[in-house]
Length: 357
Figure 1 (tube, rainbow, N blue to C red):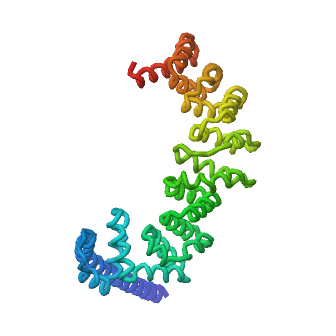
Figure 2: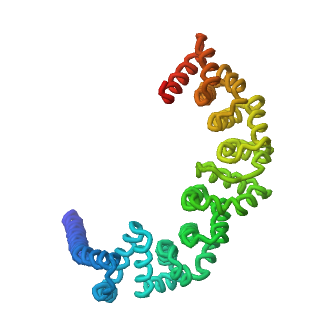
Figure 3: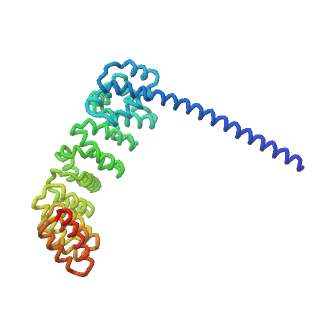
């Protein structure tokens, strides 16, 4: 009985050893093929890049490039995409025109209709590189606008970025509306793309969204505007500063430093510095310091004396931005013996060193 069991065990070990040997041979073969493929690409890529550099530099000889397009199309496409991220102006236009001539852009448009999600994603990402060139944008047609409603968020993002490249006011508005309705990640990614178009968007799209009755979209739009950190020609912000929605109110207070300081905005800021809660005081103090709002000096001094350490630090920094009266206030508070005195003294020192005094 024991001899039989030992024989069975020996057979099992033998089969297991054969299985391991088979797997080792299979993996080794696959690795060899991968190395061969990578080596082929490594030897061709420099040649492809050299040919593209010659073309970008003004050469109209496409002989080598067309040879690569016939025999090594994927390597050529990969090199084209590398150049799109590093060149601009007329050089980028020449590359886009080359992609059109070689049928590359047409292939991407066809792939955008694929049922394979990965293929579609890749197609829209690649189109986002070339749609700054008007002929490429025309070839893409309404593919990009339809893709804004695609169930795949990655496709929506790529299509939105492609539309931003074309830069028409209507399309920019569509992308901004998409941004405020999407996840935080997509909103962050689109925010920077849209930043350079802030002025056009402030003409109609942004005021319409800020005046809408959708609190989530209003808040998302305000967050984008604050993140842009640039002057914006927006009117009637005080309406949002007086909003019954606390989050909208706070974000509007943060945005106030980037829009025209109207009488209504000034009045709202001063009121929140006097009567607001800690968060409202903090947001208003940051804005008052940025605007160097002299009327805010008494309220900033109160925040420094009685606020939390964070609020006191912000109020002290705001006062340090408003010499000479702000410095005088800090000097008076620094004469005490409490924590506010230490904060005031440190802020005054920073303000003087910044001013070179």
